Image (cartoon, rainbow, N blue to C red; front, side, top):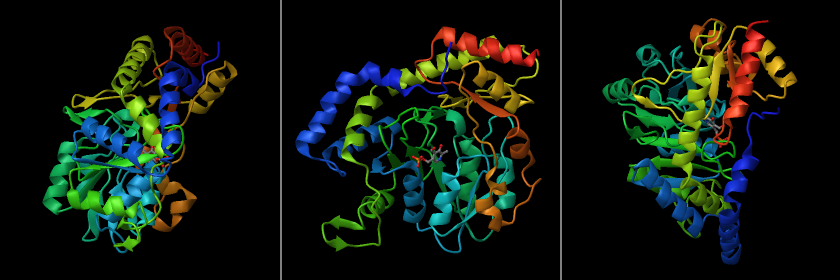
Length: 368
Ligand SMILES: Cc1ncc(COP(=O)(O)O)c(C=O)c1O
């Protein structure tokens, strides 16, 4: 049996007719860069996230960068995040001109450990970016409390958490801004590159609307130095179709995760994901821990099963961030976990038989 790590074709087949109709509308309107289909999606996505505004952008990386600069953060400032994230979180901080500062993660959730935050705050700190990794939110209450006490912004990296909840609140709606990626493999994925920022802050929304369109609100009048970071019309139309199915797809992911959890329970040598009390986990990724994860990856691959690493090396030890001066041992939980994690196939369309096959092969490997 073959079980790919991700299968975008199965989902496309299930909504193909609707997508074709909407794409034809974009073509008929020649509404390719920004425009009414993006505006419609923004309205729907803000409603979904329970925020006043959603601003469509060209990618999740652009969303993070736009939010950071839109809050006035730049040269000489520090922004705190975790070293166990996709590099885009740190890149966005760097591109805004600020310095990424890392804090270690919690070993159960793999998200920012709020207890370590205060020690990382300096007079230069301007914001905290908790990453809702794998589809489960960080523990937002203590993070918000510290941010309030220290007068810091909170920007949620919700790029892996579309539809996730923290104590009933949608991911992205808790901090000053929430940033989403609609990269094709995400829980809500475009058919190209796209992203968005959600916020209740009118001034930030205003800034982002200008920033993404060369700093202009009115054509030829450039109020700020901006960029071209618009979402394209096709992506807006596709995302509007797909948003209607997001809750249903997330439920399928949750069901698949439960089946994995049940089948892998009581197996020695494996740690399965934990859904903590405050969270509704949407399992963008199903990440387990084993001692010999490279061996497992090879064994699964030899048996037709695709896997991923999220992530393989921590950001503080990447060459790109050598200049920050971190060293091995600075973030022991991240460093330990990152040698053990491996992501098993996870998408709504996975079948029971596929999951059973993956589990059978995982157990076979562990018993070798
Ligand atoms: C946690 C996280 N942050 C940021 C991004 C960047 O999003 P994009 O690929 O749309 O630029 C991603 C996407 O992979 C992500 O997973």
